[in-house]
Image (cartoon, rainbow, N blue to C red; front, side, top):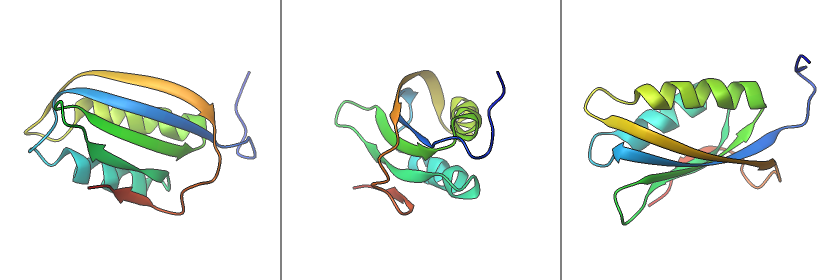
Length: 98
């Protein structure tokens, strides 16, 4: 089954494990998300992981996740946990949360 451009947007909650803090990972993620017209945000967690909430078309989010797996040159992604749900339209941009 192919996905069409008029399909309903979805939301992905991502938690990234690895050496992903202090290496520009949040800025890297925000730049890619903005280039792909995705909405949501990214923040560091206290335990060294990075959390993202992303809304958009599922194939675009999947392409975003593939780029996150590579990460910035100074970082190292070990694992990305992903949970899908319907988008709820809560975001108007993609932001770095502090």
